[in-house]
Image: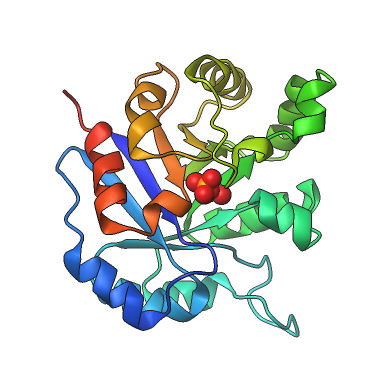
Length: 227
Ligand code: PGA
């Protein structure tokens, strides 16, 4: 079954979260996960949907201002977390090593994990995509609660989507390195979702901008239902 994850980034407080989830009815035949910002997790869990956080720390507790622990997420009823999103890597100093720590600890605590990988524009132009993906994937553990999201950084929030061929090639490489489901992320929209999701090694999508609107996220979920 395809997995469709909505990454809301720093959008939607508890009120808008409740509003969205009251109106949202995903189609049968797909698994849907909503990833709201930390402050909206409680409101999201109350909807009964599957909720993931956008990050999680590798210590159980401690003096780590601005971070959140697996314990706090589990107490809230959160079922998983995204780790290693490119915005964390670009703006908040996330490294392969901290992504490894976050992923391992979250999995050990019983959370599911979506670990993000993907090359920068200049890395693709220099022909380094394969090396970058090998490096980023090599730190991730093989685990049945782990999913990888391939998110080419040049396609995130830019409106530039990877072609289905580019996505398929990257997904096949990732799966050869680590046999887990691989989601595609980067400007997924109702108009391009079906052809991306039709690729044999695309097991779902991680959707940013187009997941903020009930209608467009529902249309993307519908594109992933078995025909
Ligand atoms: P986008 O974001 O769909 O807005 O490109 C995807 C993501 O960052 O997960």
